Structures are given as C-alpha cells and as structure tokens.
Amino acid sequence: MSKYIFVTGGVVSSVGKGITVASIGTILKSRQITVSVQKLDPYLNVDPGTMSPYQHGEVFVTQDGAETDLDLGNYERFIDVNLTAESNATSGQVYSAVIAKERRGDFLGGTIQVVPHVTTEIKERFKQLAQKSQAEVIIIEVGGTVGDIEGQPFLEAIRQMRNDVGRGNVLYVHVTLLPYLTSTQELKTKPTQHSVNELRRIGIQPDIIICRSDQPISEGIRDKISLFCDVEREAVISLPTVSTIYEVPLILEESGLGQLVVDKLGLTARLADLSQWQELVTRLKTPREPVNIALVGKYVELKDAYFSVREALQHAALYHTRDVNLIWVHSEDLEGDGSEAPLHTAQGIIVPGGFGIRGIEGMIKAANYARNNEIPYLGLCLGMHVMVIEFARYVLGLTEANSTEFDVSTPYPVIDLLPEQKETENMGGTMRLGNYPCQLVQGSLAAKAYGQSLVYERHRHRFEFNNQFRTQLQEAGMVYSGLSPDGKLVELCELANHPWMASCQFHPEFGSRPSHPHPLFRDFIDVAKNILREGAQPPLPLSS
Ligand code: GLN
Image (cartoon, rainbow, N blue to C red):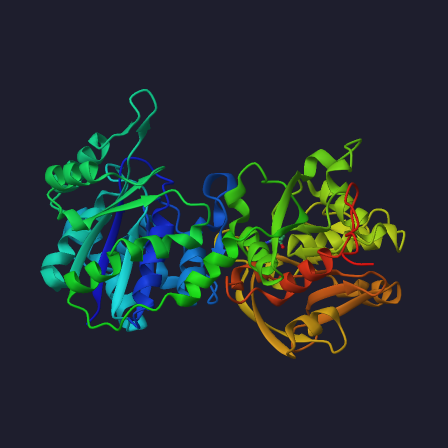
C-alpha cells in the first residue's frame, strides 16, 4: 500500500512549494523509493487549458494529453518520470464528477455535501493515483495557501486521510515563508505560527515545517518554531533562497529531510545517492560563457509563461558548457516601426507557443530577421506557424499569407484548422493534445538531432500546416523533416538554405530534462553558440 506525503503552503504563495515537492521526490528516488506526485488545484476551472498564461503561467502537457499546472513540469524534470492526467486534480474536476454522479442518481435520496461527497471524491483521486502508479510514496501538493476559501475541501480531505490509511502512513509537510525585517535585521516566525494555527484549527498538525527565507535560519529561530508549532527540532528545515532551483534537493538532503521522511513513514530505503545531482549542480554553478538567445513572445512580462522553454534552453546550454543569456523580446515591440535592435545581439531566436493574433506580426518579423541574417531559429508550435507564414510571404511573395487563426479570410491560408477541429464547439480540452508519432526524414537537421527515425512528442494546438501549399513551399526551399506516419501532417519543417532554421508543430520543451536536453534544443544551442553577433569579439588565438 502506498504512503502519502501531503504538502501545504503557508503565509504566501510563490515560495517554491512545487520545487520543494519535486525535491522531496528526488531525494526519495535517490534512495530507490518509488514515488508519484499529484498537484491539487483549488480553482473551479476543469484544467488550466482555458486560462490565460497571465493568470496561470505555462500550461504543462502530459504525454497522455492532459493540460496541467506547470508544477508538473518541475516534478517531471526533477524526478525524471512521465506523469499522467491523474497527477493534477482541480476543484472543477472534482465538482463536475460529483454533480455528474448526482445527476446519474448515484446518491438517490441523499443531500450532496462538501463533506463527505466532495471530500470522498478528492480522496478517490489520491487512491486512483496510488493504484495506477503502484508507487511506494505519493506526494500530494495542495495548491494555494492555508486559509484560502477554495482550498478547504482539499485540506479536509487530506486531514481525513490520516484516519483512513493509518497514522503511520501519512505525513504532513508545511512549507512557509519567514519574512526578513531589514530594520531589526531578523527573520520573523509569527506568520508561520499563525499559519500552523490555521492548519491545527482544521485538525492537521504538521510533522515537518520547511522554512523558506532569504538566509538560513538560526538555531534560535528553529527552537522557537519547534516550540510554538509543536514540531520536533530536527523537523524544522531551513530552505534558504538559492541561485539554481536544482540545488534544492541537495539542501533538503543535507538538512536531514530524506532520513526524517524515511523514519517517520517507516520506509525501507537504500542509502541516498545524489552524486549525479551533485555533479549537475556543480556544473550549473560553474561560470560558463553565455549564449544570447532572444525569446520572442507576447507573454514575456510573465516569465513563468515560458517555464519549460527556459528550462529546456538551460539544459541544452549546460550540455555545451554554456549559460543561456535570455533576451526577452515582447513581440509587439517589433511591430510597425518597432526596432529590431533587441535581436541584434541574439545568437539564436526562439519563438515559443501562443494563442491569438496579438503580437503575431512581431514574431513574423523575428522569423524574417532570422532567415535573412542566418541566425539560428527554433519555432515551437506557434513558432512553426510563424516561420511558415514568413516564408510564404517573403520567399514565395504571397504577401497576404496567414494562419486562419489570425485572418479567417486570407487568400493563402498556409496554416489552417484540421477538418475535425472545424466541427469543435467547446474550447476546453479539445485541441490536439499529448503524444503523437513523428517520422523523421533522413538527412534533415531534425533526423540528425534525434538520431532516430520515429519519435513521440507532446502536442497542444488546433491549427496545422495546410497541405495545399506543401509543394509550392517545398519548391522554394522548405524541407518537411518530420511527418505523421501516414504522411498527412507536417510535424517538423526546416529551411534548406539556412544554417539552422527549424520548427516543430509539437512542444519539445516538455520532454527536456536537466541530464538529457531535448535534441532540438541541444542542436539549436550548438549552432547558436558559434554565431558571432554585434558587439561580440572574435576569440583571440591563445598561441601564435
Ligand atoms: N495557436 C496555435 C494553435 O492553436 C498554436 C498553439 C501553440 O503554440 N501551442 O494551433
């Protein structure tokens, strides 16, 4: 039977609860303990797929096609697992399921209530994941902070679990923030005390408190939290802010968290082996020469909107012992008379995914700049649409070429809806989602990058390359380097007369891991790192 670790957050959000959960997974996995992870999101949307990136940050897509919280990306990257739809549960899903059962008559005669019906449905989801994954430990992160109205049914459900599965099989971890007061130069514990009080009020006594702060906590602070919150001294864990998120598992391990969890849950475990992780962090912390990459998107004010893209670039750069210097370019700023200057120092340009017309012309301008100046370009989903439109307009002279997403009456719809998407009425969960096969074409940049002939990649889009234009674009120099196995869908395209301009219809960023960068990102950075840009000095010969 699986054991459960429930992780709640206190004081404020955005203190790195997701990274903490991912790191707990890493340190358990390093002891050969099998783990699976679940994120509970208290909002009423069924999934984040219909939310703006400004509201939610990136939407992470699992292999089985679920649109999920970006924390799942961190879980996958840290624990090196491929998660499934069961790893993200929202209030929207829970309430829809309960109401569907009520309509079916499953509860005939009864009054449907938050306790027990909603809480039972929530607990069902914990158990389903345990059943499906067969993991020894299931780590469950409750989204939001303790005290949020929406989070209450989830907290009540996790409280009930201790009785349901036995006290020795459940652990409550509370991640909290200790604010620092510059005037008195001290970390304050009062907000943590309040947040633990709030947890206790609903019947949850945390077993472990992880204290996020800008500096390590002192012994005095540890004693105080231990005393006021009734948690053993060694279960008050200090997690200071670090320069790379990948260091968090090492800090938690060093502070004894791994052993503590093993002891408290009575797990049988091997000795922790975090040597590879240690090596990764050492490499990440070693100064490396930067590669300038311009990320041209429309949500650039909110960096979390491109979380996986950023990570994938970082992984690829590390592979080449380089660092990524991201130049965030707001695509709207390139439009009209907008200057291309932000692109001048870029050694590579990446246009990531996105939806809607805003900023599209700026992205097309960036693709045009990359093509004309032979700057490496990687287009991800929307970035591929943009590359195709640019090529049709400026190489073939089809000046009004567009995607029907942005201009329904364009005479040259080089990107269009698939016939089955034309019938779709609902917006939620109806895109082409999750893993689809892609057959690579020998001799292409993509085939060289992957070193395989068939790959599976994660999708999230409605619009596709329009086959009516295939021959015309091909004759002008576009190469279709990846196709669906039936040959009907263009999955990857690249340019014949360019050092490295390639785009994919899927999202390779979701599959990148710190120790295995995604092949497309890896080769993109490989070419970009050798591009000499404005203001840069050629390397001096070391000896004559
Ligand atoms: N908006 C485009 C589509 O729906 C691209 C989506 C994306 O970039 N994920 O097809």
